[in-house]
Image (cartoon, rainbow, N blue to C red; front, side, top):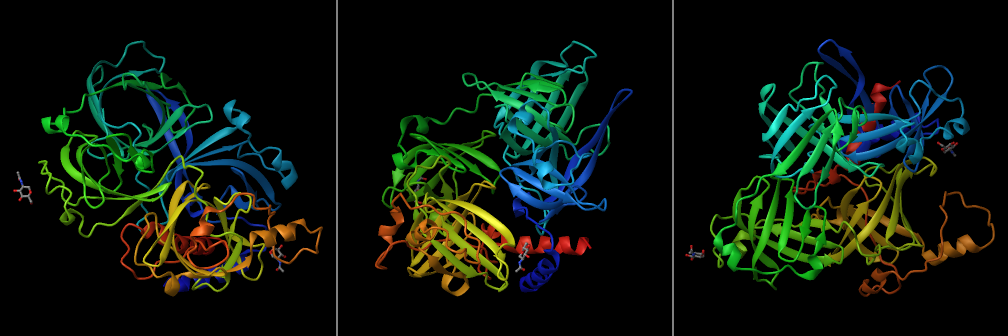
Length: 603
Ligand SMILES: *[C@@H]1O[C@H](CO)[C@@H](O)[C@H](O)[C@H]1NC(C)=O
Ligand SMILES: *[C@@H]1O[C@H](CO)[C@@H](O)[C@H](O)[C@H]1NC(C)=O
């Protein structure tokens, strides 16, 4: 089935690519709601939304993707007869929230040169001279169409006071801290129970869509109220918040609507404001006071979903939609890699469990959790092998990586996407900075037609059962991906996408993409330094001499020379039993489906 869609994709692309086009990464694509108007009526306001679709190569009505650079994208709107260009500053804050700044949708320019002058600068954004457009995802292009689940940054149980600041009165609506807010039972949803308020009682649930730090240095949070069905209440809300370090109090203020600007000035000053006071969590049982152990130093720090300090470990678990605060109780075999834990969720639920942590590289760890947590601490049972039977490794990258890892390839490699012989891939290390790799997919017939560009930071790699796993961070979309690879020789490697956690059992040699080295870094350097040779047909970005030693080189087992091999590339997952990895494995497939969709929907 997916071969078919690729076939159509190729056909489609070749028919389509007459103009200069660019493509949005799959993470940006989807159907979004945006506020189209808010108007006051007697006794309230009317909130109206319109739909904005981000297709692989266009945002219909706004224009076709013409050029991307930094955070900007220039869209070309051909609808008025003559081409008209607009520039947008686009920030992806989470899988569900995109913040766009532009000079205004009602203006456009007839040339690329003219529109370039209008791309909003950070200064324009800070001084509110650029118009903000918030896009909230309502449907993704995945099979189930669901939006991402995003953990709320406000975590735990609180009591709150509440004040509406609509200029009509000066009373505080809920003056006593008798109202309750928590992200219980779901970590991705805020439950609010207004009690003893001037308007009586009210319960509501808000889903967290994403949080980010704004250009003004403030923390923002986007929320969706799935219960709202009328125009008289906002469906989407933007808030600013601030956590007071010493007391844990949270100051939270909302804008009046779906923008992050209307009547929202600070965490203390908005259309609605709350002060949240944390509720003290249950005291751990006595056994926790009397036993102790410490996590190893190499594990300390912040990881994607883990935070580890001396004897304390925080774990945010997407599967259960819970955040656990745990304390280390005892250390266990094998090799002292398992740690018995007392754990408490953000809602105060307690249990005893065990975590198994493996160091894979300085910036990469993997862990498994015991399958049967218990309400008793049985030191001889809690970390036994039984507890880990059938569990799979979850891979985690360090959020603030040390400058250790290099990428396992150096130089430039090319290959053909399996099942899509018309698409060519190019993987190249950054010869100046061996921690980075660039990956592009382009037409095999015309390398200037680039469909996809990715920028990877390699966090680390390790070898297991003859397969090399490389864990990477994609800075352009802030996601983590693993690749499994086999090095045949210094000139030939096979790689396959292995998901967000490194999936085992994939067979790169059988199902991966073959990449062949076209140039080493020193050849690229020579190519660059020899005075202007007639440029070869392919488009080669500037290369610089490799000044840093690649730490991976030495480890390349017996295969002579230098560089090694490396990682990366998209493929549909073969019919292996993937569990947690489906999202990445199918990313490439998703792109093709959406491209198809685009084709069918546009003439
Ligand atoms: C602890 O677990 C072991 C092994 O399963 C069992 O034999 C023992 O009875 C348990 N101890 C307690 C106090 O439950
Ligand atoms: C390759 O694609 C570019 C941009 O799409 C186009 O301008 C150029 O004419 C194409 N070259 C060939 C040889 O088809």
